[in-house]
Length: 195
Image (cartoon, rainbow, N blue to C red; front, side, top):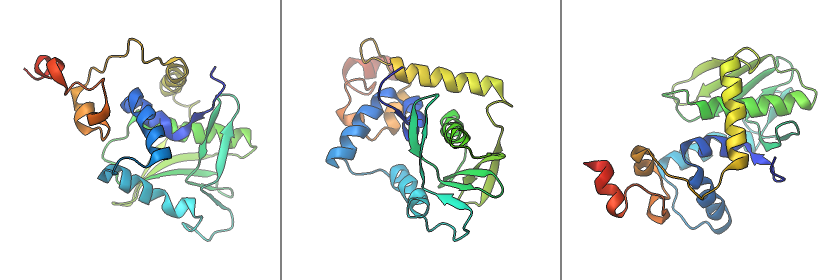
């Protein structure tokens, strides 16, 4: 296991493209890249949780930093209602429930559980259309739980050596594409994949 904790927010980024985490970490330090609408919307959707202004309910934890020792995960939760045990990860608009969304909320679930909280319900919340998507806890969905552990293992063992991006659609949607030597949109690789 890596000595450095895995950032909970990096789980979804890693699934999108492992190389994007490298650029994202540089961008966090240097503020070198203009944000795309997806990033702006994501930051905006977490703003109220981060500032603990989403709810005035005393039992609501908002934007609290959490750590999970078992899986070496570090991050923040969006909202967790201590009274009801409902853990919610908010997204600007959910059109597809990606594995990365589920794995982020799994990470929060494990961290809160280690901290002694009873997490009774996990859900994703789509802010734009006010929809709630219940998520089975990891022990109720063994296939997703195994995929979660595999992704964490892949993050811990990832190496740029030998990495090959195989999905051109990811490169087309990546804000770091112009900087990335792994992009399928560059040079001879582009013609091979676009013909």
